Length: 126
Image (cartoon, rainbow, N blue to C red; front, side, top):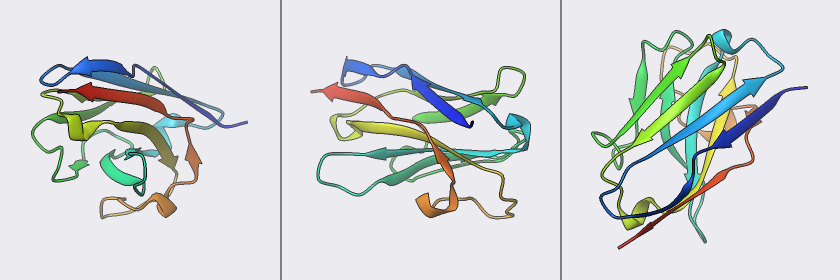
């Protein structure tokens, strides 16, 4: 049974930092492309960041580039999203996602991922 479990969300003030974690079980983590998405109330789920199985290649949405950093530890079956300089517009439920699909281009569409975590709430107050 494949499971993705996020943690690390919370309520912070604008300018603060948070680190999200996502631990995967039930499949070989080192073979997976991993991603982070977010969904704000009344909005569609949107791409945040992705990372290749080796961790060498990362890709970011323009809205978070320079503030967020995606990383992974294959020995711990865990990916991370370090979020710095948080803004109120970053408020959303954050989801991690995985896929074994090989791709030379960044995987930025939700439909390209086959397993998802349950989500963790991030709220940034002004």
